[in-house]
Image (cartoon, rainbow, N blue to C red):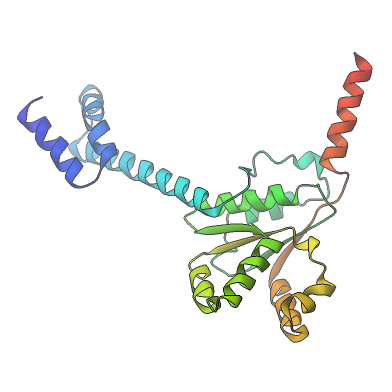
Length: 225
């Protein structure tokens, strides 16, 4: 290694730019072969560093969101949900609803893809740089109840404010009629519901259960054997 190469390695390490340290030489060779200008070479090196750094941050945001599984919009079978408006879903996938502080509500019977879409929108949010946190409605209730009982509710709410998207799954398992009982106050529960639907985008999913469909497809394949 020449003294210049050693200097570049040292500077990249000191500046905490591992991608620069790993790729500068390969990109330098490519720049010479293709006749890049100095500015084009510098831009290429920095672009690679920024892309890798953002990918790492996205990975950390997804891990920190505590999704139960990895789901994406691209993996969602829209053909199985003909009632789902594709234009609305495409707009939600841009995550522009987050800086507007708008809610997204997914309605429908069990096992029609609500959790898949909820996680997928959360993943999109992580990819766009928004801190996200996922849990079931029962999990959120338990979290806040525990914080209240330990007299840490205010600090817990402050901590949750750092997240730009709170992903609440299985809301239907907590009947709206019991929210007053669960919150200990009917007025508070009513205010929560009003805030939930205010400026909300509501997507209704209908159709058969995915499990039922998969079971039917399996039986059909068995019959054909």
